[in-house]
Image (cartoon, rainbow, N blue to C red; front, side):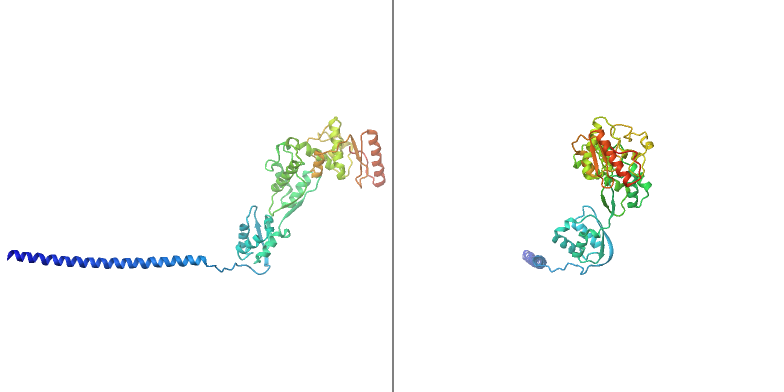
Length: 380
């Protein structure tokens, strides 16, 4: 009996345990089913979202690029910097309120091949301009805010200093101080610190706020550029500019420049004094074309009545035609020249001194008929 009871008790307990275990397994399966179902719903949602977004990228977007309608109003200054890209210019216009969007301007610029010729600088623009009109404004030089200076040929540093002062608003003394710092101006070593003759005469445009140093730097750079164009070696630059400055001051007509250059070289080659009044005028500026006995007696290496050879440096700013004449002089035997008509600039040349004297007498006769100016001296 004891054994049967004990056996029956054991069987009942095992059955309960199996029921409990099955109940736990069913609960676990239900939880797993719910979890899998939840994951499936999430994955389906993600998949649907990805698919919708993908399909959205395939569908064309309908966008409108903002652009103003009219030519704009008011006035504003916009700066185009050197090396600015089209996007940079578009951003500058947008930030200034000139265009309604950068995209509108970029579209116009890309459609117009002339847009690549926009020059860096300061521009007067209107607010709220149609992008097309803004591009046209940047292509019109009349809209640039520039500071212009025209530097004439044959002038000296004193004249140029005043012109640069007028341009920049600086004092003449400030310009002269800038002229002293020739290293900062990029003056080549062969100039030996002498700026005379190295400021190329031409018309220059500058942005507002330009400084005397910037103007001087530009003029020196242009002189070097022209010398390089004519193949002048660095060691010959000072001599070429010196000869060119003499030609600039002596020649009245373009066709005379190569001829006068030939006279200069011919005299130097044989050790004959140049005897140019222009070099004396450099030492003692005065009105008229003549020099006095007192002026010609000034002791200076620039006085070509007193010393042989070329003066130590240029006596004025030579233009390109005079530089070309100094580099490519006419091939002549002339040793003398004189301008016989100060109105027309007619100049006569001679190999023999006796012929030159006849030409000088022609000048004296012209002077007696046309003015009371003394003929104390003649050039060449």
